[in-house]
Image 1 (cartoon, rainbow, N blue to C red):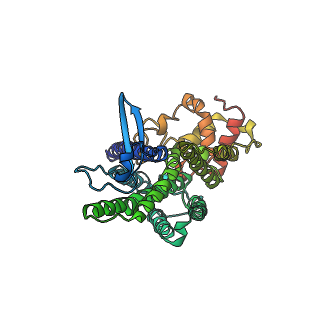
Image 2: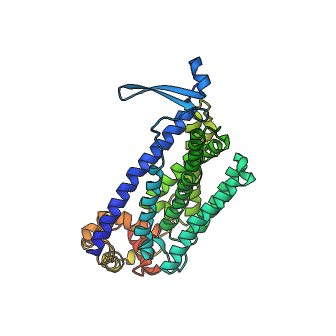
Image 3: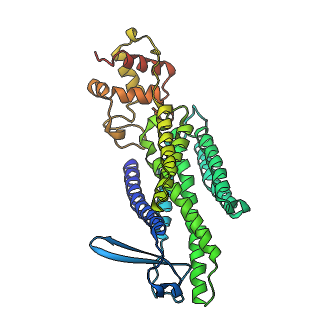
Length: 398
């Protein structure tokens, strides 16, 4: 029953996280698009009102007229919508998911003894330290004189994030490293909303209500952090789905693949922002595509001779290894704590099931080596070689 409750909790949290994440990303992307499409006001009466730009649009059968003030109108309307809870709920549900999926199952999803022998509490402590330590460093950099030089700041942040990708993959399992890289970026994004954007907006509203001129520095800082958030978004979304692709996170050089794919996401987003301004630079888009191609080339399987004597491999031996090392999870009724059903519906209890999923067994047990997760069942090198030799000899049954 405990595993069943855990499964439902995971499902509901993930569903909620996706829903509020779509709301946050949608609002973020829309306002970046809106800012980059504003035109000078057509009406001369708008200038004295401090209207800085406007946009006419049609959607859903209606025509909209959006205006943006340079800072704020002289008098605020009685009702002003704030975009903040989308960000807050996205981070809160994501962090809770991290706890439920990775911290409560650290031995399965977070720790890989072949990379670093950690206790669950050590792994959790390192994960939390990486997430919140990164936030402290990021805030310090953005608030320092370096924060006034966007290119220099971007370069320093890129170097630090590359270092984080390398460090995380040398401490956690590939899957755990990727999700923590995404959690770092997501925490920086939520921190931008909590620590800069919303406080700046509160200061602007307070100044208008008190009859004072708003400080433009608040708007400038909020704009800077909003732009950071839009470039972090696609790398974060990639890490959210990366757990489904062992070929990427299970590679020996997974940190390089992570950096390349994250860079590709950021570059592609840069190109779209440029395109909004009608200043699209095709070189930026091509750089993103090249980064993706480089990641694909890096993790592509390499041909190598069989690691065992193919002729001597018996299917009965293969079945014995799979029964001992795989079916604790990959069974109709798993015996591994925390599993209520076979992962991805892949059961390996019968000869027919093993032959049907031979490619996945080979990929994840001998190529990426991510299975068994954390090597919970203690598969040996000789057993991996046996599975490899069997697959290369044609993955035949008896």
